[in-house]
Image (cartoon, rainbow, N blue to C red; front, side, top):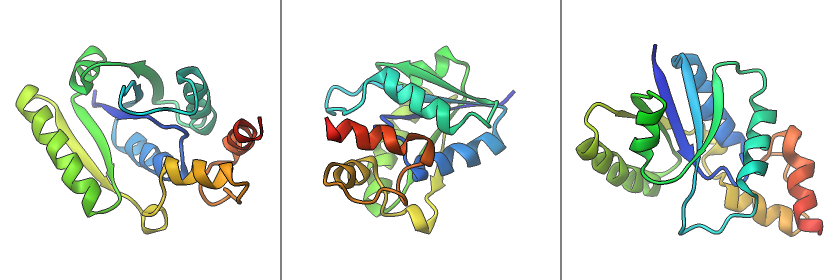
Length: 159
């Protein structure tokens, strides 16, 4: 059974994330979408809110499961029996960062392979930060966020 782990903050999940989740779910028997606690990032949504948003947008993908973990990504992968890490690359700057992570992970866990998904062109500019900024300034997030979570994200900024 091929298991993959797709780590990230998903604060909130965007169409770009969802595209990678969909594509990974077609290649692997199980995909664990791991909300990884990152002390360096200040998040807008709680872990539970992010899990619920991810569950809403992936409800048609039975082989996708949400988890929350902290620590090293490879330790989470080992815990769930995942031998693949899924990562998305939007631009050269992403590649440089992801290459550093993948190399470190390869050194620490040679049995775990990192698979890079190139972002579709229509999502190459998209990030959670951009989506949140647009929502915060009452802009139209239709092209950025899945319909199932759009109102929730907008409501967060109207408080």
